[in-house]
Image 1 (tube, one colour):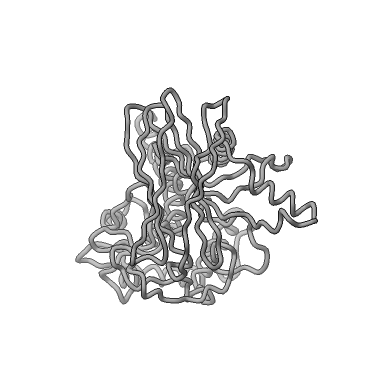
Image 2 (image 1 turned 45 degrees about the horizontal axis):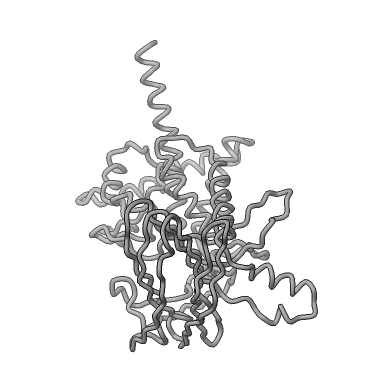
Length: 397
């Protein structure tokens, strides 16, 4: 079994986290039964494969943990580029057998900007190996006379051990279990809703930036996402061009008007009724409805389309139609559109676009798609519940 995670310290709103958030990528490998051979491959590509790097195997004495029959591996891989210093370390638990043998090898490939690292190893039942890939903390903090800097360095560079990593895993697991437990959704699509909710949470930036609202941000909170093409990369399945940034970061997004109308609807439903010129609102609504039903419907393919100009293009955004009460979720037109969209994909993750052949294209996973899925499942649950209440009433009245 292979488990990947990034550490989140256990905490509450009233208690300071016991441990600092460690920005490590951790891979836990274990065998539940029998014997399995593995190969670890690490092919660094710094700055989108534009920066070169070096790699070095550092040998040191291992330190057995007598309580857990475990020890820190005797090799460490140091990987250095012009802007980053990374290392790959590991911890072994021998279990009921002798410790597995792990030996790193450095390979050079012409197509990469620097050396690659591989390791072949075999694990038996009860044996475990935990790999840790991280950015090496700034050593100037440890040499600084400032006590706070020294404490920060120590918290970011704790002594590695099996017990530390198991504790980190428990903290991370508890965080996600406690977070998803707050979900009030109990319907038949619970697995899909929770999977999408977890995906959306994973797409958020932990140190949430302050400041004015923007339509999109980089992973570290940057607002200016200048778009560039990386011509040296082939992309997923040869889908050139590969781009970073997003040219739409400074666009005016008109879908906000849809959100405004939704807010007006909710205010009218739960607050004070909107009485000013209501007939005018109704006339505009009916005009929009008739236009969409006429110009955005493809009668040959029996689908609602991406736009008036692209009558053969599907777009998962149409799944929002019943959520805003534009159409019934059981309407034949809507049901035939859903069949064409071909949901759900593997692993419960949804992309930005779907090709004619069903392949998932564009951003992956796409936050908007998962938001639509959650809203759709919640509304379908309510619709199905109402349907069964009506049937029950008719049968037993």
